[in-house]
Image (cartoon, rainbow, N blue to C red):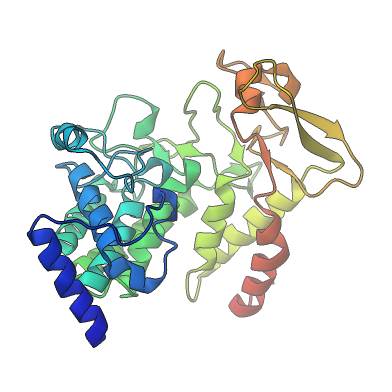
Length: 362
């Protein structure tokens, strides 16, 4: 750390210890907290946010989801958040817990304030405790008596955890402060996670394809989640699973086969000649409606969910009935869910060819 950075950290500590929290820069949104210049993480605003992150941390070690933890809290709100420490809502859904951990690690690396290191290690132990013996992670821990108990690939939950643990195991910056014992545990957790990824890849008529957004925590079979998220093959979640596997050095034949099979499936299920358009919805002031139009020149497109065995795109409203066209479900679900996207495009066009050359795969 430079002399200037050390001086800044000392001054910041003195300010906070004295109860003064001057605002050194404009507030940022939580979604931007991992995209700041390195020097920012040792500053007053970064430390103010990190202390609020500690306030939101549950006694289990994890964090709840869907909260802008960069937003300054008035005293009454701080008291309310502090009273929620015992809530059993720690989760890895929607980026929760592993994002807070990455943030605390960067602030600790810049500030050397030990409370951030301690909170990070408490959260790391939470991730170890929440992993199933077979290698998967549930969406919530402590466990809940619903679909969230399943191994959760949805919204990249498990992959977000595994990327963090791989960085820790490899002693990458800013995680050099993690002790050797926990680094070994992180490596073991990643190894188990890779094994469950390989075991959950869905085989159809003897051929490996892709993954469901969630799999049974015991049998590893594909499982549904919310009533509009049916058993299926995922055109979205499968992409980040493949990217994670591509990041494994010296992949063995099982990993290479898993990657090649998934990429082949993604190529097969690409949707051609259609595009999704947004039109004015029936409710003024709410999100635009979504519709599918034919267009021979449309960009590459994939469905979020494909029926296992037929590869037909499937859709569903809150009634839980499987439909085969976006127009068949109600406006609220059409407009407020990502049924189509170009998620695999860069994987197929850029990442896979680059990986093939390096890995020696065909």
